[in-house]
Length: 224
Length: 246
Image 1 (cartoon, rainbow over the protein chains, first blue to last red):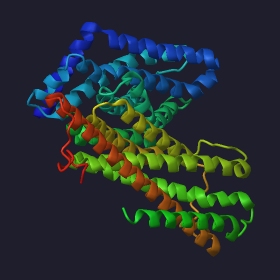
Image 2: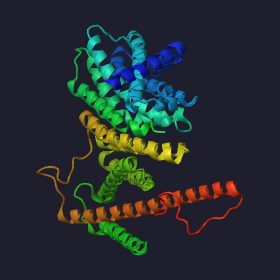
Image 3: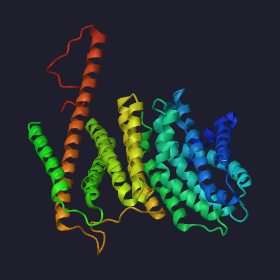
Image 4: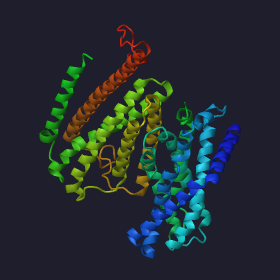
């Protein structure tokens, strides 16, 4: 219980920080939008093709945007040594990590909330009737992205060239998530939208595996 | 230490015997002919790679629990050797696939999974190169190694669900699978030989890493002593700092 309460306090701090500066979210949305627009120039898809390639494009945009957005999560604690202050607090390390994961999950979800409708308009994909199921798929995929991404952000914060390193560490790990998310989104964008239980279960499994691993390893991850 | 030279010679003899057996003793395969012989090094390199990465996973977990630098040295050695075996597998695979499948590469489950595996552990080595602090380098790369190892079954499962084209397992793969007895014998010899080479390189790489650690610690000691007293003396009978000297 105390872990959750502490995580909520960390979450509040992250949200306050972000909504005062509002730089991370804006940059993420614009970046993902640029990817979506560039894709249409590179492939000039017909309506049938955009149904075929749309899910992949959408998730590639999210993954790239996420791998850039997650970088400051720990890197900005580095400049004023504020992570040491967090560590000194008598709270569990997992609460700190969980707070940051939740904050990143919210940022990423907000970015997706803005991007999905724009994507649907640009690529002629109808969202009517699938909003609930799409939200489930997006939430599961985003959770996996933010769990691994936040942990790797803590790793890359200690390295040189961290902006380049984070995508290098993160994107290969996320390939199973990408496949599962794209397949389950494609099933929803099809003529007869269906929910692909196998892939949704796979996404949930991915989240559980890496959430458990972060819980087990967070003491080592956030040590002095 | 004394056993090193005889073991090296033994391994060299083994790998030469394996090469000879694979090229001249093994029978010609019915449909693929000579090109099939690459299989005698393709499969053993995968087995060696999986053994190396198993060592890596074990070493990563052991490092985080014990904080003994020897596990970190074993981890990085295992990754380098594993990446080497993986590279051999990724090169011999397409060489075989081009005449047999007609294409160099296909995005099949096993091919894709091993390619991702290769990328993951290349990232592990990059990560180590980019962290200065040795303690941080060891613990953070161990965490990344564990995450990467956890990811491999998921990569394989996802690709398996997605699509697959790689030949089904020939050994223990069902009623009609199995190898001709002579092929099986040669293959076993090759597996043992390549495995021994992997172990030999791994042990040498591990000793090199331990020596490097010891050097770094001694250098640090000399420098800190020099700055304190202005002299560069090094007490010869003092054990090396930390656990590297043991």
